[in-house]
Image (cartoon, rainbow, N blue to C red):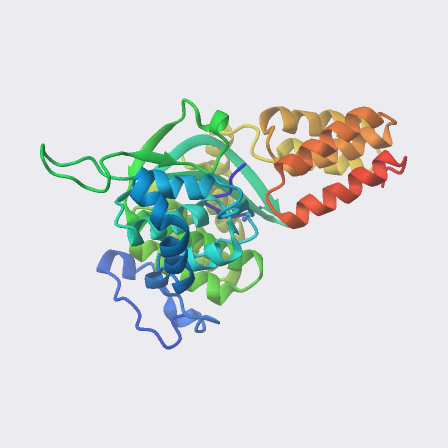
Length: 384
């Protein structure tokens, strides 16, 4: 599954740069004084900035095709041609436009940002869409990430008869395989929301790496760009909690929950904050409400399966991992652990099949290589 919007959920640059003054409503929820300067500048202006290499590519590789086929068609052709851009999907971290182009890889948000940057250099208008996919999750240690998806449309319709914008054609670019996006609903979003998503991803990635100061400044930039983007408020609340600023975490998460009263990610984190504050009754009351909305939260069967593994009960583990695969068929780790349970039960053929699915659905090159090595071991008759 494409990793576009990562949200840490506990179970979840500025240096040398001017800081944008927050509005009054946002300012009361920020706490700059509790965090050191980031390790590198947090600069939204660089997110869509095209590099000299990108401009050379447009001039040398796309220019003639644009004259013959039109700008939108020429850019889409370059994106889809394995012999030209050679793009690869990798969700290791969220790159800006220039970084994604240089690496020729990125998650879907990075690739959307890179494509928009190329399009604008070519004089093509862009429109961003938030695509409503079934919510999926990944994890890193005790941090769980909710995953969403975005795409973009190249070109704008001419505003009136006799005028021309771009080359008069709208083309949607999506970095999910075509069968996966057919029939999905979407909503147009502004560039500020894309910037908020980018900054939130970087905040979540910094948080997972233990860089809380960096995480704060990225989350701060996210809420400044789009105060209505609840995901970023959730991330900010988790950062406050991890740093030990419980009152600030409570205020931010309560603010997020006011905006989206049935947001289970925010509710889970607020339950954790209430518990850390010793407010057992409030934690229990919100926990009961959460359980009514989401009786089997993400990773519930997986965590029970891991407990069965620790007890050496591979049959129970197999059954529980299979339940997670049924409700999240594109998450690689569920397939991997189901394959391991099957291998330990002597069901080698099914184990190889699920390990191949883990490889197919892996979102980083590192995971792909790990699963490939495991598949080789299982194929040679070794389960571990």
